[in-house]
Image (cartoon, rainbow, N blue to C red; front, side, top):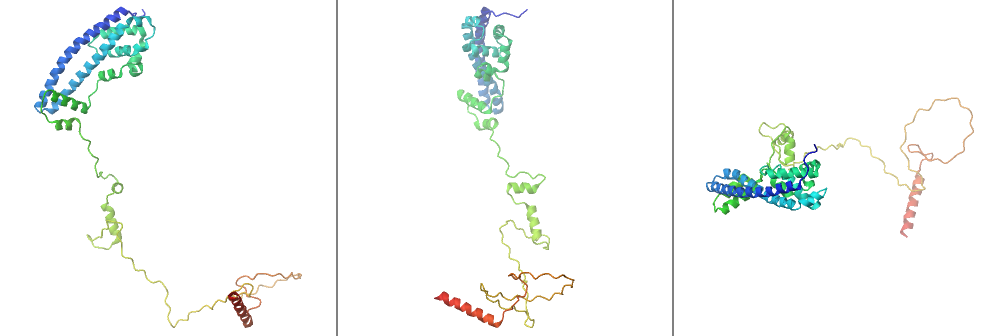
Length: 338
């Protein structure tokens, strides 16, 4: 009703029988392994490298199985010795967790050892299905030996491992063979990337990205430089640092003939702070504003105002003022020299 119960004597017997079964399988597989190595050595001697590279995978698989049997044999013996401790404790002891988990994990994989399946059934009755499911799904976290997991995992061996095993077999059987051919098959050298990528939809962008000159751009440059050149005689400029002859710029300065009357500006008068202001250019007389009737307004207070540019001075300078100004300048110069 509640499933099979744990029986320590049944589990111990199954474990001992599993150890004996593994001894028999190990002897059988060792004989098969020797025969496989002889076949691989013969293939190497006959220069059948391709067949030897395939056959050596079976050699590696048999060696992994033998190594797994050795680990399982130790775990089965340890669990069988401590079966009384397992029967007394409700939970799995910490020092036995790796051994118990490894036996439970390897039982369905090593199907040729039927006694391991019986031991798994007894351990499932002891620790429950949740513990067994945890071992099957999260093997590393449940405590299964990592090396045992790698040996029992079904995967294709790497090329470097196959090449190393071929070298060992050839050395063991004293076979002369071509190692370079096997290296090219098993460990090929990576192909270097192409120097020039094929142009896609935008050849201009590809050429600019790779740093190579684009013939289409050179042709456009030559047409822009000399559009009137005959067909087949366009000037190609492959480098941007080619100096071109400077273009002649016409002289845009106006020429003055001798007969033309050119107005000459009068010399500017020196300005001294505190002296009279220089005369400004006369302005054209503007039309007088229309007369409007105005009321009498008292005259405003006279204030000093600064004359704007363009207005005529109230007292235009005379010759006496210019002489006086020149005399003052000379006096200042003489004072500075002293």
